[in-house]
Image (cartoon, rainbow, N blue to C red; front, side, top):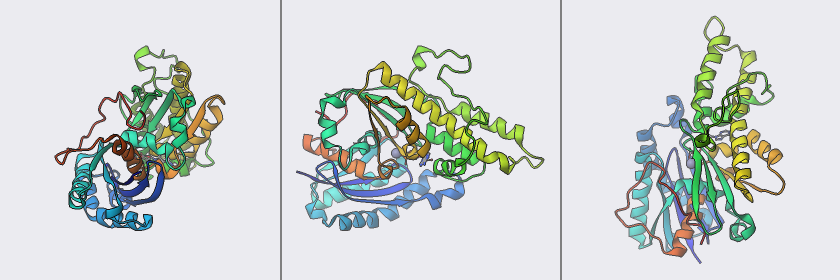
Length: 358
Ligand code: KG4
Ligand code: ZN
C-alpha cells in the first residue's frame, strides 16, 4: 500500500498529483505557463523556474485537496529529477526535499522519460504491465524534448533502439509553427490549422526512412531526424511567399497538413518497422506529441491486430505529475529512495532497466 505525492517541473508545467498504489490517480493538478512563454515563442528556462516557484504551493495544495488527503497521509514524495531544464527541475526538487524533510517522508527521484511511458498505464494498466503477453513492449516517446524508441522486456530489461539525431518531433512542430507565425506551442496549433487541409498537396521529406532514393543505413534504422523537415518548410515558404514574404492564406492549411503528415508518417513507419523487427506484442505511444489526433488515428489504423496498441490518455501525454506519482510508487515498493543531496540532471541517462517491472 502506498500513497505517493508526485511533483513535476521539468519544463513549463507545474504539476502535483496524488496516486494510490501506482495506478489509481486521485488528483492530477497542472498549472500551465504557456501564456507566460508565448510572447517569447518558446520556453525561457529562468522564467519557467520563477513561475514554478510561485505555482508549486497552490498546485500541491489543490492536488491534496482534490484527493481528499493531507501530507500526513502521504507515504512518499516523488519528484522529477530529470531529464529537463535544470533551473526548472531544481525548483521542483528543492520543493520536494523541503516537503519530505518537513513531514519526515521518504524522497523519490523519478525519471521524466520513463514517467511518460508509465503514463500509458495509469488508471487501468496494472494487469497489463504484469501480463507475460504484453512483452516485448516497444515504447515511442514523442515530446518537445524526446523522440525515442525503447524496447522493454518482461523482466524489466530495457534498451533504447534509437532516438532523434537532431530535433525532437515536438520541436519540429513547435519550430514549424513559429516559422509560419502561428504561435506557441506549435503542436496543438499545427493540428488545428491542418484540419480540413490536403496533407498530400506538398511533399515534405521523410528523413531516415529509406525513401526518396536514399538507402537507410543500418545505424540509423531506428533513429529519427527532424531538422531537415524544418529547413524544407523554410524553403517552401520562400518559394511560395507573396510580395510581402508571407505564405498566402490559401496555401497555409495544406502546407501545415502536409508538414504534420510528414512528421506523423515518419513516426508511425519507423515504430511499426521496429515492432516487426523485434516481434513486439505491445506498442506504447506517449509524450506530448502523442496527443496528436492524426498520429493516434494512424497508429490505430496501421498497427497489426496481433499487436496491442496503448496510446496514453491525452491528460497523461503532456507533462503531468500523475505519471511521476505512479512511477514513484514502484521506487517506493522497492525501497529506492533519493538522498537529501540528490541533484537534478538535464540529459537522459542510458537506461538498461525500467523501475516499474520486477
Ligand atoms: O511531453 P510534453 O508536454 O513536454 C516535454 O516533455 O517536452 O510535450 C510537449 C510537446 C510540444 O512540442 C507540443 O507542441 C507537443 O508536445 N504537443 C503536440 C500536441 N499537443 C502537444 N504535438 C502535436 N499535436 C498535439 N495535439
Ligand atoms: Zn515531458
